[in-house]
Length: 159
Length: 235
Image (cartoon, rainbow over all chains, first blue to last red; front, top):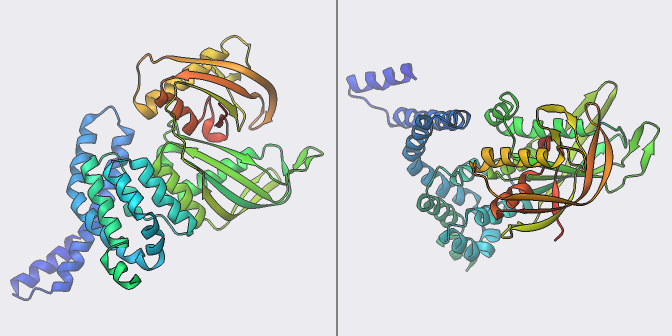
């Protein structure tokens, strides 16, 4: 990563920044940040009695939350073709359960769709259900995913 | 949260300590989907928030010192952890074949289908459960001595294990009300790592709804994550 950063610096020195290199570096940072979040999560699990670990985990998860919203929306869009109809059928119930903050019910409803269709349950969705996130953030996560998978585009296609 | 995993197994005739094969399968599913969680559970020896039971729909019975179980098994997996349920399901899709070998015997597993059991929530303070997999109860202070109903320390050992789970999984260290009554029971000798006495039967449990839910999700007694203490609500 140090080497890649040096390349970006050199591009700036030459006044020739390359967008793709900057985007690649940004994606790499995000990937590393996700990996780091997972490590902190397990560290705080192993050191339950040390509140500082939990606080660090909260800070890291909080910083990553806005990225997760985007990822969930994109994941929803990506799955629309395969699972859009199944989610459309359950959509109202899932929205209501999400609004009511019934995490277990929402999880059950979504997992059931993936199991019935023999599809892998996405890692981003697992993240969205973790108790580290407040109810409000949880709702934003799920609404983002649902809007991706049963959004307007899908309804137009169906019409 | 309960998920049933159907596997095709071979051979049909397997050793009586087959339980270890299923432990190996579940460990593999977790390891393949979440190595950090696997490490947390199996290297740090933490209490694990799950239990499971096995059911052989084509079971024939004894065949010498082995069991003829047919070629299908249903693994009923129960957990309080959303993350773990997902790992098990994703692992089921990912691990296309698994073989357990032990001193000349082996079991080969091939995934067939998975389905979710209906969600059950406990709002009651009193329930009656029956064992779906045998119950093991330890003597406090002697983890190698397993107790049966009526023996001194059985109820205390059972209560101790429930309070340990409540501490670990719910963060509840309070002196919450807990009472368990054995309604009916039978002794069953198990072939696990060694011959061990276990209990199958019907129990009445009185406690807080959260504790009752926890028992339903993660099981009762000790060695739950090795396929013991899974309960079904019957009243």
